[in-house]
Image 1: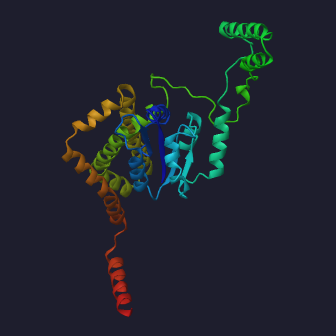
Image 2 (image 1 turned 120 degrees about the vertical axis):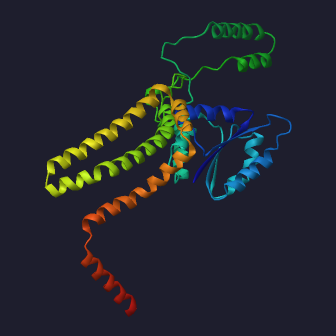
Image 3 (image 1 turned 180 degrees about the horizontal axis):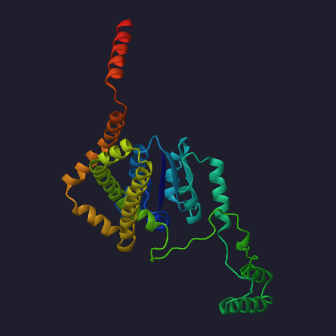
Amino acid sequence: MKQILIATHGKMASGIRYTAELIVGKMDEITTIDAYVTPEDNVEKKFEEYFAQHENDRIFAFTDLMEGSVNQKLLGYSQKENVTLITGTNLPVLMQVLMADDDVTEDEIQEFIDDAREELQVVDFGGGKKSTFEKNAEEDTAQGIENTAQISEGAASYAKKSAPKKALAPQSYDNSTAKITALRVDDRLIHGQVALTLALPIGILGLQIKTVLYIFIVGMFAKTFDRLAAEGKEKQIVALHYGLWAVNWFLYSLFAFFGILFGSDAVSALLDAIPDVVMNGLTVCGGLLPAVGMAMLMKMLWDNKMVCRELLMYIRERRSV
């Protein structure tokens, strides 16, 4: 199983995880270690416990600085076959690894890094704008060079070295090759986190509704289906079949709409309001539904003579072994 470890100086690890989970939702496979937040932090012990716990997992470890102490402490663990250490972490490379398959290769990781590196650039729309601060700095530097040129050649050389370097032409973001080119994160709940947050409580509630519906259908309509089949009323059977499915999906959509309208907290509160004995009972009933379906099938196929013959054949085969 893929595991993600984010370890940085300070609280950068928790911060970048929070940003990532705004987009993809909560992910249990992410672990963060905020190193040196307090003087009592024992980073080595935290690493030791983490790698011991995930000894058989595929681990991708992200750090902030190549020469930083956090990255240095992980170099030994990176020698293991199941560990990949990535430093200089930014959000694009983290997101691509998060959404990659568990069997992602080292070559693919390198491609992710190359793509994410392209995302680090100055954003400029080609207007050639220059801040007043930059203009003043260039004028002051030029004046300083002119004044000090008469003092000594060494001083003039130093002044030239201290002059700001000409900025490289910014790359156009239209030519980006990264798989993730832009991210929008806000607090208006308009991204995939909504679906992921609602899916679990609505899914649990939907399973219980499904159990209740099946119990109701089996109890109330089994005899009706038998009667219609005996009378050869095929059209009525089809109509009743689709009618019951329409009711089923209407109730599903009703509770899904309820969750979207009032939020996952309301659905969770509704689930919590249902007594445990009822939830456990519905779970048990749901487990029995396949057996009930098989019983209904055998009811139509049952034949006493056939059963007796099959039983005798089974006994004969067992005795001949």
